Length: 518
Image (tube, rainbow, N blue to C red):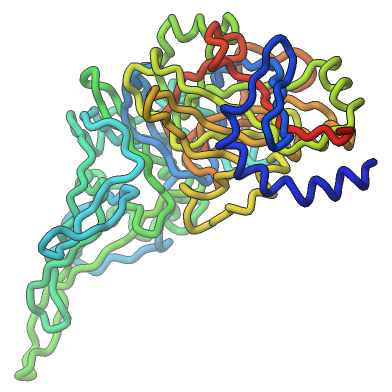
């Protein structure tokens, strides 16, 4: 019988995946009895248990981009994201020419953006990963908190972890004066103009992609860097880490609205440049000695330890809904929340294992609860994973639509793009776990808990440590990690849960199968 199942599965499973979308209306489940559709594929719907877990503290000093700003989500409320980063000298033991004058200190943090051209053929940019269009207060201050690379409590054998809820700790070590303050910073899609000279010494204007590009306090860097020439503090990377321990980029709300942007602090163009000028004797075309002004720079990069911190509490109503049941499933990015899904009870699983059926498809359909979304943008994708073992599902790995160059349209069989019904306006997401269910039935695999989250990149499957979450999960499957791609977006959504009063939109496990005894 197993051989028969295998042959039939191979010949039908790929076809069925594409047919099922058009066959959904041909199934019904009344009183537990299945009404077959003409193709012989049947449907069973299983009640599941799904609930929300609030991630109170997550690791954020991983090599991911960082959020910076203030975002007022229509559902989840206002949250602020700040960044604490180590600094690294581009050149240790820097030497400055005699009489060098520090002209300017420029911070450059490019936005994620897409380039296009306008009607005149000139380049224009559209910002990506910017949420909201208001302003926030941005300040930059020196930090005297030492960010360890290795954890001293683990005998320096494990990388040090820093967490999203440690801002109050870090702020105790900030210097009093800021080296930059903008009382109303608003991200801009304007390209950056640079006026310089070409090879012939003529004035030349060049442009670069939009960036958070600002001038920092010149006197501060004169004392901190230039005046320290020849010192032990600038002589090595480790000495510099201890001397100049980092910068805190702090975002604070100034109004109900704000904006939050994603930045790659370790990108090639990210960092601080100290520009200085000096006079040097040269020989002109007539062979005479003249003094000429030269301009040079010293780069300071952001270090390996860069921590995202988050502030803000969910509205009281949201907290109560998260803690008191499964009427709705709240999935939020950033420090955020995730959903926990428990598929089968023992009786249902034993019943499935006892029958001679071929599983054609198994999926979860998550419907947006638009009544609770308050006009918020829906996330682009959802991600389903093995929460018990902190691993990807086999269906993720087997998805043939994998496309590294197009993450938005990749793995769309495993995790569909949001589908909106033109007539009803309802939006749903389909997460397929066909092979996972087949393994549960045919191979007696363990029925593990699953996790579901919003994701900013379905191709990214790395995880980050979770230090605290609530409510605590019963049994041994504590929430130890969360998907990293969920932590770098502030977007979220509300879905009908497994105990929703809306029977038609309630979250269930849908299993399409063929009875091989027929």
